[in-house]
Length: 109
Ligand SMILES: Nc1nc2c(ncn2[C@@H]2O[C@H](COP(=O)(O)OP(=O)(O)OP(=O)(O)O)[C@@H](O)[C@H]2O)c(=O)[nH]1
Ligand SMILES: [Mg+2]
Image (cartoon, rainbow, N blue to C red):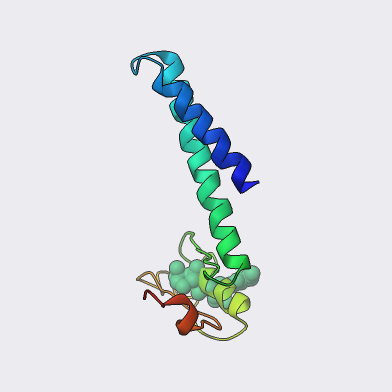
């Protein structure tokens, strides 16, 4: 699938390069190319996760008291994030890592 998306994007870019960059068609192709770039990145990240060359990242966002910290603790299966009935308890963005192998994920050599 990734190869297909990459090829499709390249073809769109070739076609777009032959269009006037103020035309509606150019803008339409630009939108498609941007969407394909996002899909490409998503699929590539998925491959890296499958190959255990990248960690799965999950962002939990929401209003105060919506249960974000509770959900994080459930996902991690440990009491990592502080939970409170007081609104605005978690003030700053927090990051947690589970079973992270730093030799794999932080090898920039
Ligand atoms: N009834 C009910 N209460 C919940 C649920 N999830 C969390 N809570 C309670 O809601 C309150 C807030 O939960 P948190 O997990 O701290 O919410 P939060 O989104 O992290 O809140 P802030 O850190 O203030 O932004 C706590 O008292 C939790 O015990 C749920 O599914 N049902
Ligand atoms: Mg919180």
